[in-house]
Length: 176
Image (cartoon, rainbow, N blue to C red):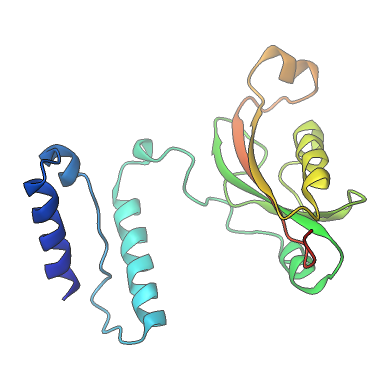
């Protein structure tokens, strides 16, 4: 039983001298009781338990990390799946303050800088796209922070006043 294994592991860690307060903060999901049998069903039950746990916490414990942008542009997903040309995926991981999009927003871009979707437009999107074009075909990925809170951001036309962390990942089929 998974519950027994988790309890045994916690006992072992406690016996090895790990701090009880830190151990108490560990959340080891074993899934909701939905009668899951197959690995896929068990994965769904564990994901459901993670959602249940996260939504029960005050938002201040996970500011900006919930995928808030649930209306992602399906054309960007379709472009990633169906278009064989070298391209990159840009995904907003977190957003804090006033930002043009929230976490979960995504776009795809090719070497020429065209594509589908948006991560907010303007100077911030242009900067992310410039970085993405350098990653296309390399097999690499990176996370960049776009800061729209300071005077420089205001001078560059970023009027929102928040920050976003954006994952940029090479989504090319033929990576070098």
